[in-house]
Amino acid sequence: MRRRIRLRSQPITFNRERHAAMTDDTILPFSFPAVHAKKVTAAFDGGRLTSNGGVMLLAMAERRLGLADKFARVFPDRRDPTRVVHSLVDMFRARMFAICCGYEDADDLDHLRSDPAFKLACGRLPDTGRDLCSQPTLSRLENAPRLRDVIRLTYTLVDAWMDSYPCEPASVTLDIDDTCDVVHGHQQLSLFNAHYDERCFLPIHVYDTEKSRPVAVVLRPGKTPGGVEVRAHLRRLVRHIRTRWHKTRITFRGDGHYARPEAMTCARTTASTTSSACPVPSRSPEKPDEVADDIRTRRAIENLAVLRGYAETRHKAKSWDRERRTVARIEATMLGLDIRFVVTSLDVGSAEWIYDSLYCARGQAENLIKLHKTQLASDRTSCRSALANQVRLVLHTAAYWLMLTVRDAIPKVRELATAEFATLRLRILKIAARVVETASRIRLAFAAACPEADLFRSLPGALLPLGP
Image (cartoon, rainbow, N blue to C red; front, top):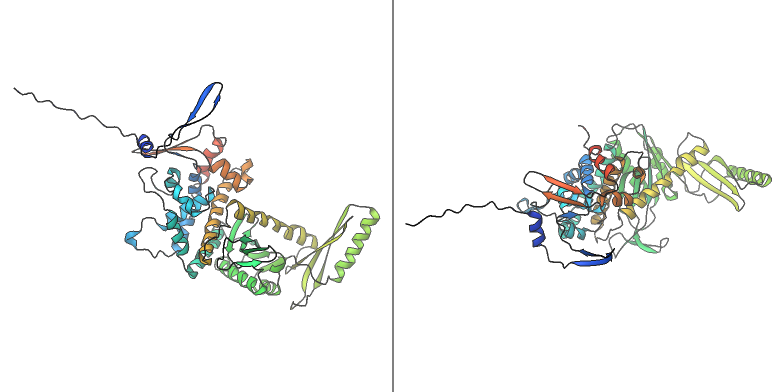
């Protein structure tokens, strides 16, 4: 009599981390010098770890601002819908998150596309989800739009700035300036600039300096903008702002070449718009000269190290169509006399207030340009096409918005509330974490020794989306 034997099937457990480690390329263990007579060995077998755990904060900041969705609405997708794998929103998010975390080149996504934290931040499962887009896909994205598409994409930044105000403000002060962007080849719009002794672009940056918020960034040739060009930029920007803000008083501040006659006339003819700049007239007005002699004499008589005074007059240069209010800051020192002029279309305020409180505050805008240019690497405009480089400037400006939103969520009593972006990246974004995906949840295990653990755990609540 034959006896049947029934085999019971045993449950098979699947260790995802062990499986992932086994499928990776084999990297031999290595060692470090011994410590207290104990051998120190190491190997890359720690499992699904990421060094960008703070990207989840950027994901919350992006969803609060909705930048990727706003870009996707104005960015035409001319791809075949049946072959689309990566949506425009996912590509915008991946690129912005990478820039914030210090990966400013598109080819960095070739390595980051499988990073579990980046996948999770873009709304994909860290293990079972599809990897993010690669560098060729991002390069095609940057070179896809046409001129009108790029213009709409640029104006999206202006809309994001206006959306940051809960209601129409009574007045805003915008700082406008250009910066040298050295090119990496013979790209479109690149010119040799003798002042910088480089072949470069001179993109224009506009900031709401009081709030540290970017308003617009425009790529332009590497030459000093003329009065007609400045007038065109100001007129287009004001026209777009006026579509939503009808009563806001707008004050522009800039250096000498932003006070060309065309720009000043535009400020006078545009409703509720003023302009302020600091050129030095070729022929100094007579009244400041009289005040300067008095200040210089009093400093010498009283034997002071420095003596400052202010004066104002009406001045008309040869290229101006009318007299304009000119404010002079006069400073006498033991080394001599220094006079700085501010030409403005404002009719109110004392000379001291115009110079010290209004004009000198624009110095902060130069610090904001440095954050944009050096700490977010917005000078990586190495595409041949000028339109593609403008798209890059827009994406880097969007990354600026994400970093600024995270910083604004930090309590003011903390030192990081005023930190630079590079410090925020080091202290908050570049945090090690183990990403574990199970059948029912995803768990992030951050490093127990994280020095900013108490601050980090409070930020997700502060970055929750605002109400409707």
